[in-house]
Structures are given as structure tokens and as C-alpha cells.
Length: 138
Image (tube, rainbow, N blue to C red; front, side, top):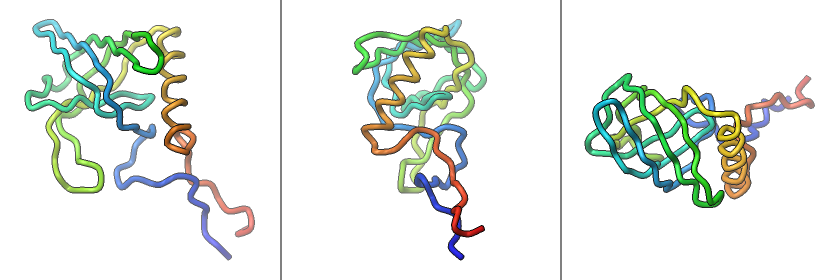
């Protein structure tokens, strides 16, 4: 009897959505500040901005992302949910802001989904795959 087939690499941190490393220009604004930065990774659920000066936790952030391949911008509202990340493959802490998408127009959501699908194809995987049972083990 063989175990489950791993359809996609399982990351040590549990995530609802697969993250993809990118460099996407983004404008972020809160009630009190405006920041032009770059997204360092993105998923269907949110993004990470690497920064020595992270945004305040729980801050609501208006985002304008300029997707390089799509040749267009999308607008979203996000909430800062954490202020650090672990560098992939290491235990090194990277300062910045993890932002969860909380609102996006249906048209911008479709544009984001298509962009994520293109990233997944380039990475040689399908987005958000899960571990599936091996049919021969039953």
C-alpha cells in the first residue's frame, strides 16, 4: 500500500492559497500615509510587501497593483494581518506587511485570477492544489 500522492509541494506553513514570488509595482494608501512599493509575493488571498517600515497591523489599505503581464492595473482593499515573513528555504525573518484582500471588484478579481493562473503555469503547477489520496491504496 502506498501513501497519498503529493500533487504539489507542501509548504511548512499552512496557507489557504499558493503564493508566487513576483515583483509588481503597487501603490498603497491608508488614512494617514501613501507608499509606493513592490509586491514580493502574491496569492489569490493577498500579498506581501517587503519593507523596513511595515504598515500598521489591522490597517485598511487601498491598493493599486500594476500587473506586468496583464498590462493593466487592479484595485483592491486589503487589511494588514502580519508584519514579517520567513525567507523561502531559510529561517531568516524578512520585515514587511502581509495584506489580505478584503474587497475587490468582480472585474479586478477576474484579472487577478487570470494573472495567478499564468504564474501557476509558468511555475509548472496548478494553483491551490491539495494532497489527494492515492486510488491504489484503497
